[in-house]
Length: 421
Ligand SMILES: *Cc1c(COP(=O)(O)O)cnc(C)c1O
Image (tube, protein in one colour):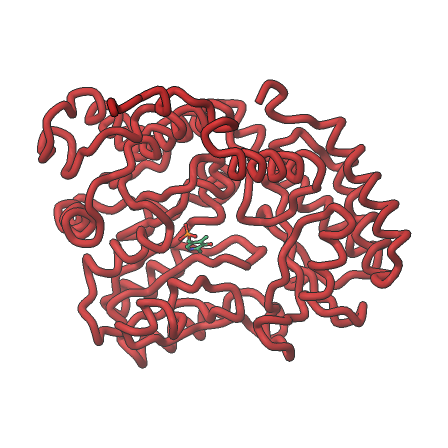
């Protein structure tokens, strides 16, 4: 029997009906639901095209001009462009665009400057930090001695005096600034001062706010940090992927940590998509987008407050609102579920000093990056706040859920995306 390569030409719907059908289902969900998950976004079509391209066929271990494979003349140009754009966008001396994910980007920064057993000072996970900032089941919790700072009980904002005193006491090798659930801006200069005073390396993890930084609506951590790590898929509106920025001093060591230290071949299709993302994030339209993300989060937070919800820290400076649901007598877990039924996607999240377990929580994290990409503005945020209030006021009422769900689908229909996809 001769090999028939017709299979290579089959469209997805014919090659794999099951997966194709599920992608269609997911497209329909994205089309009809209001997307409020703070770490999600809708990427430009150009980013998807690059990520779904023939670049997936290429191996290119190593760095531009030092690749370990033949045939890299075009892909290394793509990688060079991605590196140059990342450096320019954030004003960095060096960039590595190969990390596959945010957790891996953090691993790259940590491995470059820490040995197992060293001490790392990062934000408490139940007060906003990320798994890769010291969770016991994460490699950070396994390899390093973790000391954690938190927020002030009154203001619910980072207690910088606590950070300073913990740093003086524990003399960490690395201090991590940055969070996954923190609605306020972060004072990077203050973090750097503490790092310098105690001889620590400052790693800023800007995964959530990278788009706000690129758009000039949040202070840029790059001039203050030895390393900056980030994902590209959140507010930056790029592919699922990550990168690390650092000062020249750490450049060669960082590159060695990424490859051959913790990764093999880079994902060229993702790197091309990151390059596109960096280009678009440097354009004037992106600044307008980032400004609207902030305005929308503020409008959503204000409208919810007017409806009696308590906002952790009293408000927001970024793309995120963290609701304390205790006064509404509903847990984060239950709220996430009933809102999903009503066509609003969000996630439960611990609030500072949360009495509930991490799998239940008393909080709900909402973000404005994705709905802003659809083109929604302050008026729509008020609509969404009203819907959230209605659903959470009668969480057991299936009629309310159904009514809101159809209203939310209508709202999304007025802000369509990917018309031809
Ligand atoms: C999302 C996030 C990450 C990790 O990203 P993954 O790509 O999911 O590994 C790291 N740090 C922070 C602060 C994040 O919010």
